[in-house]
Length: 67
Image (cartoon, rainbow, N blue to C red):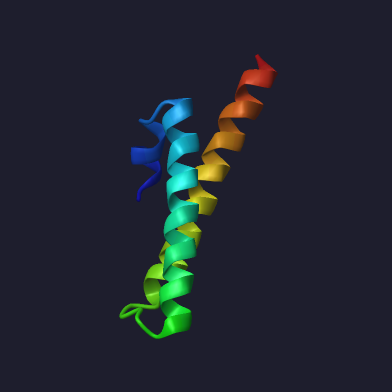
């Protein structure tokens, strides 16, 4: 997921996206432990997407405080 796509989301959608990504990461970890995960790189990408969304949320919050 690109940063420009994330910035196009509303605040509520971003928070829901973080929750969805966390749930996906949980499922991927479960699949990894049971040996069913075909692409372990997907876990790394999901972690990065979570961090990217959280970073943009923080940037928006700090921008609102500065105003």
